[in-house]
Length: 186
Picture 1 (cartoon, rainbow, N blue to C red):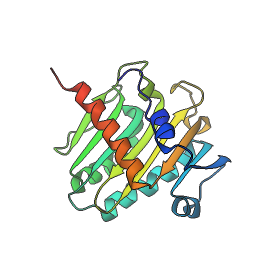
Picture 2: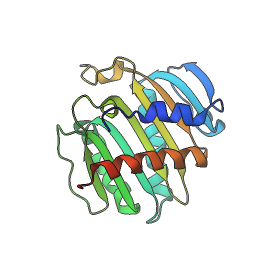
Picture 3: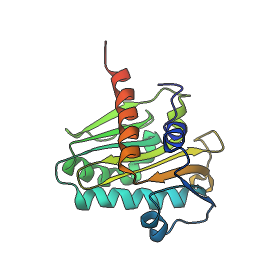
């Protein structure tokens, strides 16, 4: 798990079927809905907006089905949105939260926390992968600066990919499931 990158996996799995938006200051709802798969370079607010669109879709459209995989780099980055994720866990089959263990999220029977080792590649990646009967979408991104310790979160820049291609989202979920298998005791 230490060397796995969900961002690199997504780019490779998507092949040439991804529109490149280049560097953007924001991502619009039109971009989100209008392109099955696109990649872009942006600062944190753009990733927060896409994450919010996915999270709201989960809360509004999921009914006890589906899985969600969310990477926060550090678990403390989940704290501002923990209530939303508790609601997502209420309406989802299972929510898996990945991050370095610098904070402990509240417990929920449908949520499992995956504690990442310091220095793991996933600990500098931001992702939300949602696989449900009513919503199949993913956002994966990697911090260009290589560190999640930048004092001003909003100034960090990520290379990211968003997809609503069901086959690609399922491949991302399968890759995340394989990581979960690695964390199970032998």
